[in-house]
Image 1 (cartoon, chains in turn red, orange):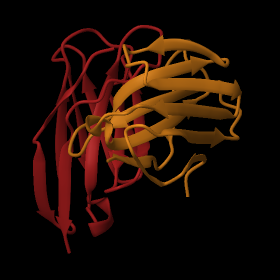
Image 2 (cartoon, rainbow over the protein chains, first blue to last red):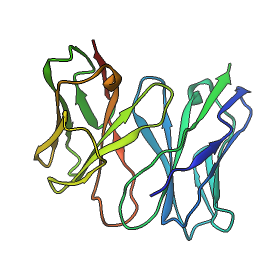
Image 3 (cartoon, one colour):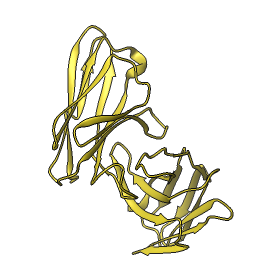
Image 4 (cartoon, rainbow over the protein chains, first blue to last red):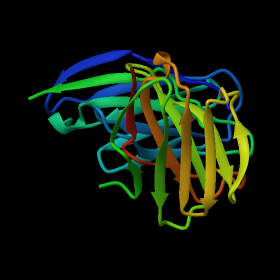
Length: 111
Length: 115
């Protein structure tokens, strides 16, 4: 597996706005996973998108994957203060489930 | 509440102490992981157990000693730690390790401080 690079490193928005964060990686992947971490807590799995999928939805979350550009994006619509957290992507290559997390995007949603 | 339980939540120890971190899951998962997370950094993988056998050791110093006594339990034994080992230690589990993509379930971690 390889490390993803998230962009931006930090994002501050108002409640109700949409938040978009991006992840880029370097080599081919089997799948890409997004996780959220609230301050002082463990990580929570959000979405897993396989390499043959282009888009996936879960509630207010939308993840896209462009394997030709080696990039993925996570869109959170109608954000809430409770969405304030760090968001990490983890591109996964090969047959193992080994995760190497990028540096993450710190999202702050102002009420 | 998470389905992976880690104890203790906080631990302060001296450099000469011996202590253990515990992790438990009852989801029937057969892969379990230890991660170390420093402040404002992403989690870094330390060890992976698959079917109670150590599958991956990411060149972790021997002062960290993992143990998987059964499929539900994962321990991390600590001895002669250094101040730079102060961090949040996260445990995670997944159904299996080597059979395709699947999410990992994390505990809330043990915050370790070395004096």
